[in-house]
Image: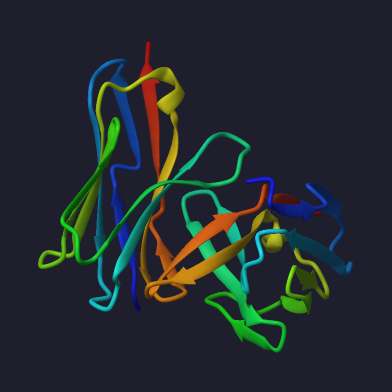
Length: 110
Length: 114
C-alpha cells in the first residue's frame, strides 16, 4: 500500500545550526505535502506546505523542497532555536487522503 | 487551534466498556476526521466524513464507530474497549480548496484502556 518514509527518526543539532528532515512517498497521485510540528502534549500544527506544481517554498527560517520525479520532499530549518525542539511529521496527500510519516524528534541543544 | 475542540482530554477506562470521544469545530469546515497516534507509528486514519450524510472507513476502522451529528460535531465510539486501543486520538477538520485539503487538528484525547 501507499506509505511515506521519514528520516531520521531523531535529530540533534546545536542551536544556530541547520536541520534537514527527509521524506519519500510512494503514491504518484500525491499532490500536496504538508509538514506538521507537534510539541510535547500538544496537537500537530501545520508549519508549511507545498503543492506538486512548486519545487520549493520558504517561510522565514523554514523551507520545503519537492522532487516529484524522485518522490522526495524535505524540510529545512535554518538558524535553529530551542523552541524548534519538537516532533515533525511529513505527509503526502491526494485529495482527502493523508499518509503520514512516522515523525522526527528534533532536539536543539543550547 | 481553538476552533477544533475535543472532549474529554484524558480518559481512563476498563476493558469491555463503551466510550465516546467527541469533537466540535467552529471553522465551518465540511470535512472531519478521526486519527489515532501511537509512538513510532505516526497518525493513522480511523474514519472520515465529508458531510453529515457521508461516513467512510479509514485505514484502521475495526473496533470503532462514528456519528456525524451535525456539520460541527463528529463523535468516535469504542463499543467494547480493549487495551490495544490505548492511544492518543485526534480529530481534524479540513477545508478542501484547489484540489488540496489542509487539515487542522484538535488538541487530542489521551485514552487509556486497562
